[in-house]
Length: 270
Image (cartoon, rainbow, N blue to C red; front, side):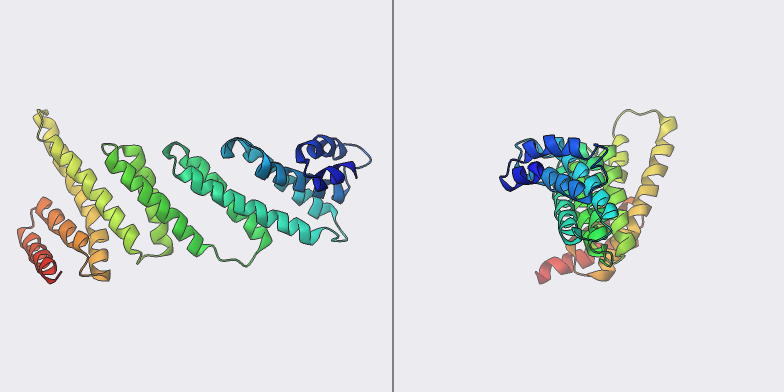
C-alpha cells in the first residue's frame, strides 16, 4: 500500500525501494498486486529518470519480468487490463530505443536486441498482429543506413556485411522491394569496383588473376538486383547507369551499349 501511495505521488524511485522488498518477502512474493505495482513503478521510473536511454533499459526489462509474473499469479484477472497496457507501453519504448540505437553504428546489435523485445512484448499484447510491414521498415532503414556508412567509411567490410544481411531480410519479406534491390546491387557493385581499383597499384602479378576473378563474381552478384530494379521501374536512372557499369566490367560490350543508350534516352525524356 505504501508503494502504491508513492506511485500515486509520482515518487517512483522511492516506490521501487519498497516494492523490491515486498516481492521477495515470504508473505507477499506471490501477490499479483505487488508484481503489478513493481512493473508500473519501473516503467514510470524509466520514463522519468534522467539517464542515457541505453543505460536504463534494465528498468524496462525488470518491468516486463514483473508484469509477466503478475499475469501468471493473477488467476482472477483483477489486473489484466492494466498489465496489458504496461506491456504495450514497454513494447513501444523498446521500439523507440531500437530506432535510436540504429543510428549509432556501434550499437546495431543492441538495436536488433531491442527490436526483438518490441516484437516479443507487442506479440503478447496483440497475438494476431502481423509484423511484416514493421520488419520491412526496420530492416530497410538498417540496410540503407549501413550501405551509406559502407561508402562513407572507405568501403568498411563490417558495414557492408551488416547492410547486406539487413537488405536480404527485406527481400525475403518483399522480393519486389526496389530500395532493397537497388542498395544490394550498389553494394556488390562497389565491392567489385574497389577490387578493380586495387589493380591500379603495384600488386604481385600472382594475385592479379585472383583479384580479377573475385571482382567478376561481385559484379555478377550485383547484376540480378540491378536487373530486378530495371524490371520494376525501367526508367530508374540509377539502375540503367548501374547495368551499364556492370556489363562494362564483365566485358559485355553489347549489353553495356544497350543500357548506355537507354540511359541517354531516359535523360533526354527528363
